[in-house]
Each structure stands twice: as structure tokens, then as C-alpha cells.
Image 1 (cartoon, helix red, strand yellow):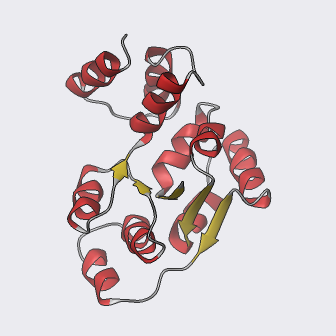
Image 2 (cartoon, rainbow, N blue to C red):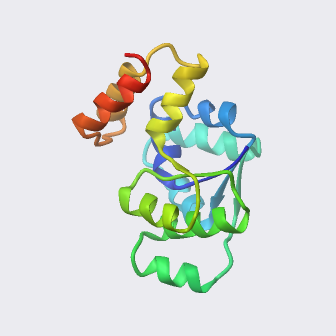
Length: 163
């Protein structure tokens, strides 16, 4: 399964020690140039090493999207990494694009892309038996990665996981 990711899901999973979940779920994760640049400047040294290893091992791959009209339109509304991820996912006919930010997710859906986020990756991991429980991972996202999760969304995801 071919996936394209924005910065936040890769960063968050690396911080909580679960970047490998992307490798387990997707054969290759592509990132656009802007995301690669953001990840290269990651402030957490341990997370940076894990990310660099994934890139060196080539299960996270980097390429630049084409400078298209769609990219220009998206750049007027979104952060560069999100805009490039959406365009790249479209160009590669990706099975899924992984974006956490709500506005970026909405644009990706409007572009006809299948979308998930870091919580979706964790939920899939729980259902596949790759992690034993979702709640501790959500707590780690909050405390280690400083990731905001609305209580109603947390309740919904935990319910889907049977927790």
C-alpha cells in the first residue's frame, strides 16, 4: 500500500517510539521535499535518528511534487508540507495520504484522496495486534509529542478500538 505523509504523523510516531507502525502498514511512505526539510530539522534528537534511519533504509522516500496549479491553490490555504503532500499523493495515485491537520485533511478529501491521521495509524495498529492498547499511545502523543486530541475524538477512537 502506497502512502504519502505530512510531517506531523511521522514526527509524532517517531517521538512516541512507533515510527515502525508506518512501515508495518504501508510498503513505502513517500514524503515531499518540504516535509523532508521539516523532518531534517526535528528538534528531538532521538526522533531525528529514527527518522533519518527510515529515510536511509528507504522505506520513507522523498520526491518533489510537480509545480502545478493545484499546488499553487493549496499553498494559498495550507502549510507548504500539507500542500505538497496532497499534490504528491495525487501524482503518485497513493492509496492514502496521512495528514493530522483538519484543514489539510478536508482539502485532501476534496481532491478525492483517501485520508488518515496518526490516530488512524494507531487504531489500525491496535486492530492488527501491533500494539496492545491505544489509550497509552494517545497519552504519549499528548505528553511527549504535545499533540492535541479533542476528548470527543479520543472517546470515538478508543471505542473503535474496543477500549
